[in-house]
Length: 340
Image (cartoon, rainbow, N blue to C red; front, top):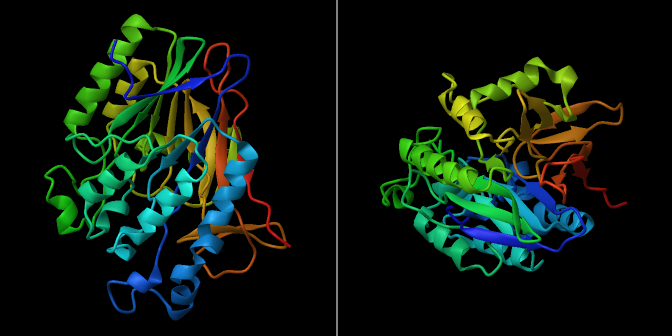
């Protein structure tokens, strides 16, 4: 059996807890590459010193209250166009390392816009003590696996994948030859995860498989079509940037016995539904950078770019795993409580 790239050992007698954070998307207005790219109000809101107020205080509250065994970050860690110096990524890494909790990030469609380049970004992630990240020379950046083991039994494996799709890749990122603009998995990624998952299934048939990546495949349209059947969460935006319209990847994942697909990308969607036996899940946005849902006084939810009125809906998606068989049990959204 192929051994996962990283293994998390959880003590017996309790359910392991997985926390999905997504689209922290730190945007440093001081590194604005193009004039008038953002409004003057946004430039003030996205000022460098507001990283704590816009992002870290929410993520800290979420992590400290959930107390997860593993944190998955499903893409757009930073808004790369506004991080040519790489300082936002370094600040995020320092922040995440402060919890001494294993965290597994993947690239979104904005990270590799930075002029520091995807290889530099990957090297910073690989060097962090608690960060689980492996840069392979497959299409994209950072395709790897994380296993959850309990009592010597491999309960679940998370496949962390780059779904690519950055239309504004910097030349520094493109230089490695496997950072691409097209959205979706390359054939080499598909071959790699198929071989790896098949190997795991052959010797450990009971091990559960999850796939985590940034941009949702077209099957996620079923969440909108069946919004009355949501397991939990809410929808606040129409689907954008979907891929795999022919269902090749979706059918391949079903054939491998995958039981959950975790994505980000759609900031105003935070929903989960079990469809054809597979959980399709949009993670809860974890900062007020870029587009965010706001709860109005009349109870309505409106997606908007900050600054905006209302209470921002930010936090994370929590997935306890059964200590019996590793299945996802009673997942829910943690929403941050606003300071008075």
